Each structure stands twice: as C-alpha cells, then as structure tokens.
Length: 349
Image (tube, rainbow, N blue to C red; front, side, top):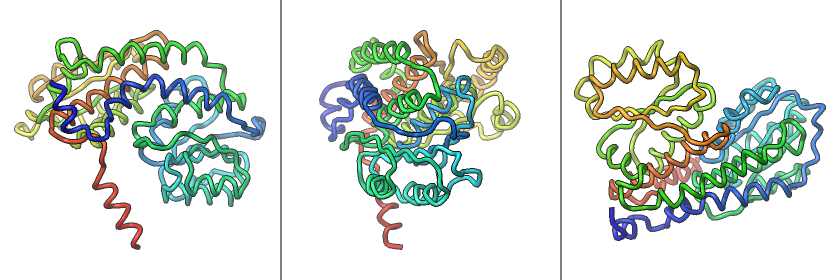
C-alpha cells in the first residue's frame, strides 16, 4: 500500500486517530481518575449501561473484562426503555458520545422516573442537559471523534468510575501494560509494508470476502462484536460471527449447502491463551471442517500478560484491519452516510 492511497481515501484522517489511540487511552484514564462521583456503593445491586453503537461497545467490553471479577449483574441496554428490574438499587450509566442519541435520552428519562442512581458519560448534548437538570454526575469526554473511534473514552472512564465507587479493585498495573502495548503496536501497524504489518496483510486477505468472526464466549464475545462492527462501519462490508461453544450447537450445521457463497467467506478465529481448553479443541476441529468450504481460514491470537491487554490487543488489531480494508476497497472509512440518513428520516417523524 502507498501513501497516496491513504491520502486519496482517508479524507478525515482516521489513520491518525488509530496511531494516537494509546494517547486517547492515557487521556481517558486521567479523565476517569479526576471525575467527581458521589454514588452509594452499598445500595447498588446491579449495573445497567444504556447506549447504542460506539457508545455501547465500550461497556460491552467492560462487562466481558469484569465477568469473573464483579459480583453484581452487569447488563448493557440498547433500547428506548430499561429492563423491568431497574429501580433505586440500580446504577444506570447513560453512555452517549454525542449526547443526542434518541434511544439513550429516552432510557435516561426512564432511569430518572425509577429513582435509579445515574452516572452519565458524554461529550455534551441533551445528555449533559439532563444530567444538570437531575443533578446526575457526568464524566465529560472530548468532542470531535467518530463514536467508534472514541472507544478509550467509553471504556476507561467507566472502568475508573467503578474503581472510585469501590465496586472493583484498582487496575493501574493492567492499564499501564495496555498503554505500553498499544504504543508499541502503533508503530508496527502504521507501517505500509504488508510484510511487516500483519493488520495490512490480513486486510488484503479479506478483500472481496465476507468476514466471519468466531471467538470464545467468555471474555471475547464483545471483542467479536467490535470486529464485526468496525468491519461494517469502517470497511463498509457485511461481517458476521458467533461465539463458542454455542455456535457448535446450531450455526455449524449451516456450513454445508451454499458452497459458492461459502467460498467467498473468510473465517477468522480470535484466540486467547485463557480460552477454555475444550473451546480450543472445538476451534481446531472447526478449522478442519471450514477449510473445506471457506475461501480463507485465519487465526488471530491475543498478546500480552493481563486480560485487559489481551482484550485490547485483539481490538486494536481489528480496528487497523477494518481501516486498511476500507482503503483497499477505495472507501473513506470515516463517513457513515446511511446511518446519518436514517437519523434524518427518523427526525421527520
């Protein structure tokens, strides 16, 4: 790949946002550490984060990351209303990057009616206005990013907030390792020589293919979702996926009849050293099965020591893959014109 391809298609310079992601994480951690949050730990019986799209994926990843460490139910809500169990003993986190997501605003009003404890994370908009109206604490994050490129701001301030409230232990060591890892990989992944850059190499292998993402269901279900979302929004291609072991009880049977279509699919296994041993065996068997049908079968393994670093190693890899695939497709990765059209049409109703 050459610089002129980047200059031709990347009109909004998303590449720089990816290069600087470690700086965003550093800033996000600082924002979370400085936030003033006066919420009662003793009365919190469950956590519900309400948001959509790029504002929700950070919470999905946090839910997965804390799956074995948090002794409270943690739910991510993507609707106009909240689950029926939400009450005064719930912590509702209103996550809206723009502050103007209509579903999230409605859920925010719902949380207020139910008397829940509310924490807002936003760059402003109606969410900030409601936070001030109802005296809800708000963690202000910087404006100017596509929401999907602001993952650091949707994940780390909330992580720091849960530490502040006392719901989880300090994560400074893992955060430090993660930032160091992202900084190091930033240098490798911005290299335009595919022989030295595995994200560019994978993107080239996905050209004119339909990506199918498989992962374990414990810590990496949300990473799977992130990969699919980034491929759809950045690369403008359809992407699908599932998690193991559930996939082995239904979707696996679908790899049989549509041979022509399957030959145009590229299967990507997201692997981690802590995946359940039986899940690792399942992936190996699946790989043998799918080699018969799929155009490509590829394995991407996490890197790093801590769970946090390993999660973000796969996320950062996938973000770069989706970026390079957009450029290979001859498309600007930043605009999401069809989503803007949908929002404008909804505003008329």
